Length: 70
Image (cartoon, rainbow, N blue to C red; front, side, top):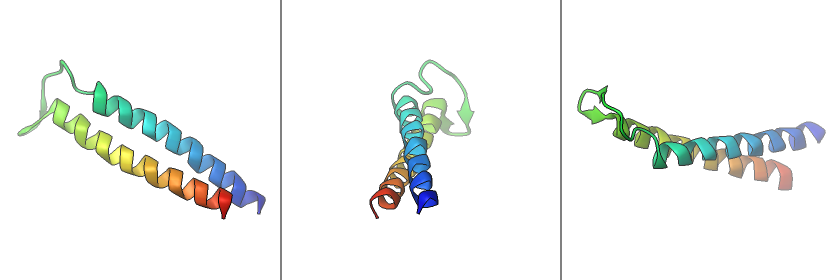
């Protein structure tokens, strides 16, 4: 029981960190930078990474809440 609660708290903390990095990548990442990967600009790379981090953060938050409330 204690391990489940501890793991739920850990997942919620991870989700807060992931969501903050996702917000930064979506709002500020890649602006004013040159380069990229082939046809994808640096800003495009940050948008893709931000969306991926956003989905992982939401999944971690849902899993953490499930473990705490379940």
